[in-house]
Length: 502
Image (cartoon, rainbow, N blue to C red; front, side, top):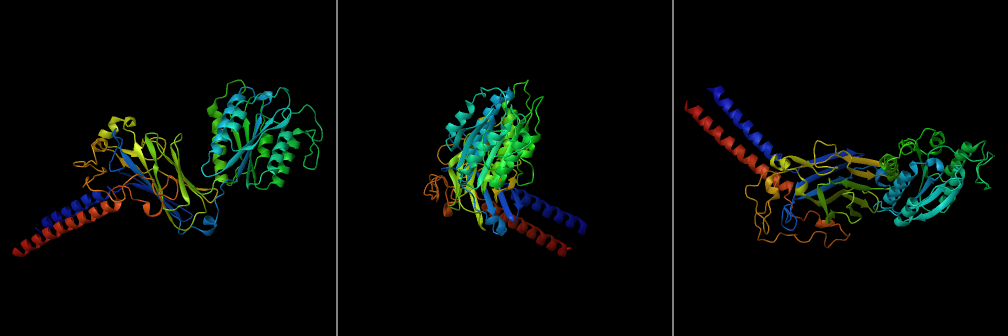
């Protein structure tokens, strides 16, 4: 008899615990990462906008939130000031005849790269162009006019003198441009398919003279020595070299010319196109993307970049921050939100958020019927795909904390369109509810208004949208657990009374 009652009691307690645990699991999913005593938590939950869980087409809203706790960050991390407007980049582009089939793809990739760097959020990047054929020519001075520099690159023609690749003159022209720069971050992106080749071999490979002209036994040595002069004159310069590969290419000089990144790796990138085959833009763009990541670590200070899957639309007016120095900007083409620190990272807690809208037309019907979980950052909502690194916090100039993606659970009620502020009957897991739709919700209104930062709400405004709070769900869980414990207590009392009756 004792074992029977004991087993029943144990099963009842376990059952209540399982139900309570299931209820607790209904809280908004989140992911967390910690590095250098900086803790970042990203969460996602279904929410409402203007009192509605979805728009007129049934596209549901979700809120994406970040909590960045830097209260215990080391001094050497938080004392780094973000360098807004401090980057000048020189693109040196080989337009000699040997570039052949690679030339057009190289121009397209270089133009795209220049545009991306100029568009870096929160920073005034300037880009200049030097061409390199039989002579080195300064084609475009430093400019932040994206159309000017990209047009100059895309319309560049082969050098009419179809011999020679004058590395040294091109490097010398870049050196003169760097002398006119007053910013800290100076970068050269040097691109060629081979080695220096001039028609004459002298103690230097240019007709120019002066103390800043390098000497050498041959063309290659002159180019390397000219690069060393640049490095000595501008200790903070970064030099990335990109070598286009074909049957006769040799990248030994390019590997000697480049500098190292913050991780100690040489900034040399190889593009594997061949002269006999039309080079694809994708092959060469990959080299530029690698270079861009390296440079982004140098020229950007403290930023948080979140790549949202293409199945979502970002609602820019809903961007919020609890700090007026942190601004948010949306890049619709890339479907990203970038938060930029206007000043250095402080030892405090930052809270950032924005609302996204899931496009019903892009969600497979079986995802909804099966109540699948979906990603909120990455390239797709498909949880079988890798989303690592699509949300990244950049800090202390060259450090990063990548975040994986929190998930949202789908259900059919999310997509139901109702007039007014809807009441969802029998809401399934994760669905937002409105108990009193006729009552005015405190803090409701047009998101993004009354803010010190355009497009971002700050201070006490943070969190005033109508998102079902995780804390509310937690309180319900506590009440449920207390009720379950009361039931267990009552049953226990009955058991004890019955046992005494025996």
